[in-house]
Image (tube, rainbow, N blue to C red; front, side):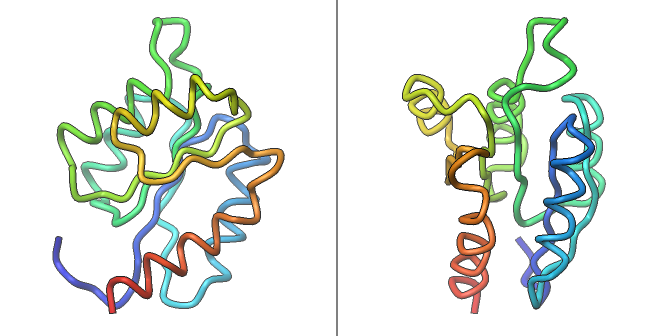
Length: 132
């Protein structure tokens, strides 16, 4: 990963409201660049390949689920193709089973949208400090 003094972050969430809230939250953090939001797995993979972010914030429930895929499948693919990316899972599916599966598949963070949303900026600050 090439060092840049700006942390590049992409989000993957099919809720326009959540995506907008994340963008506002991320954009307010010093030394951080919001590089876009994707709403499904195919657009997420394209966004990640093009932008090469330092951090990806992924939801589990995505529009691709009709094809039997979800954000955990995306997590697995990101780990295979971009192991250097820090992956945060941010989801309403906060049951221990989902957390365990995400962490087993390489998620660096797992946050419940209902209870942990405000922890995202704190985690981003930790990442920024670790890069200095």
